[in-house]
Image 1 (spheres, each protein chain N blue to C red):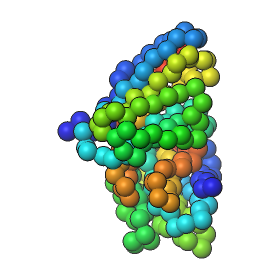
Image 2 (spheres, rainbow over the protein chains, first blue to last red):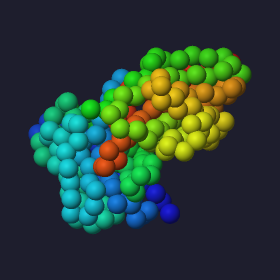
Image 3 (cartoon, helix red, strand yellow):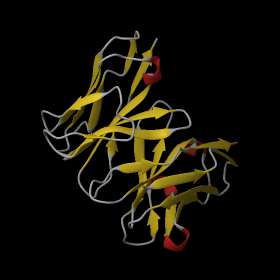
Image 4 (tube, each protein chain N blue to C red):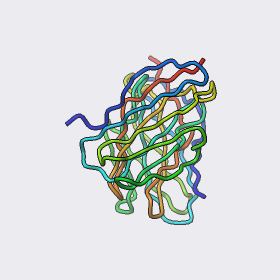
Length: 111
Length: 113
């Protein structure tokens, strides 16, 4: 039981490049989330999903897209990376009315 | 809209001293409340949660928190700090039907020998 895993752990992008972050969970959770963490800002919700095939915008969705084609996976895409997207990205999953479980994070630098 | 305020971005205590990390929430509905801990270069780990049962909640590593509706507070305490408690602590609240979490900005706890 690996919990929540994230791929990759680190990535450096040039401005304008694209990439996809993968989140996988093996706990059969219904809900999945993507957050970004910046110093002094806490965690801010980017997008979330309440079930396979569904996605919704969070607090800071601009510049990101997501997909949840399979219940266990939640993908976060950056179509044209910008330096402002330099951050640590966390994925989480949960069932309704229960706590969220977090992955180890992906550290992204955009130059 | 829900908001979570953590008073003090940095708290420093001596080993063996009381730890008190403050959290206040604003919510139009009774919230679920959580404290998470983040050690350097790691993800967030749940310390404890309040889900409308007992108002005094005990968590892992000797931490506890008390839900006070009249003060809209959910402060985290530990009677005696240990060096291994040094980390960043986040208070979070959820409410409504979609169970999204709203996080505070975090409090960095330093434990001095």
